[in-house]
Amino acid sequence: MLRPALQNLVGLKALIGVEIGVLYGGHAIEIMKELNIKKFYLIDDFSTGGAKLEAAAKENLKDYNQVVLCVEDSTTFEPPEPVDFVYIDGDHSYEAVRKDLNIWDDKTKIMLSGHDYSSNEPGVIRAVNEFCRLKNYNLHRELSDWWILKGE
Image (cartoon, rainbow, N blue to C red):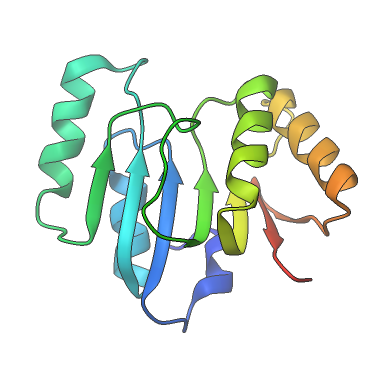
């Protein structure tokens, strides 16, 4: 089932997206089954799972031609084209989420979003709330998802 933030993209065609935090690739596969994805940049440095996790993700994603697996830090990756949406679910520390928000904001056309907006992840809540106040963005939340619709 598609997470709440991503339901905003249902019906849109040829989306170019980014997911920060790949793990085994399961969430990315779910997204590709539900949305019309033209290109999907999956970014993870695999620092918490190492080579075994990276190998498992590559194996799970090998049949998806629209996937570009980027094994690097999300703050250094430069997409070769503007992206429609970003889903942030990598490092949940305040500093990491704050950096991702600031770096990806100008590169994203439709929606900036993420996961783990919950009391278990106070760094996510703080970074997202501060960012929305600073940019005067409307913050949407459902379950542990959060999202910002650009131009709203």
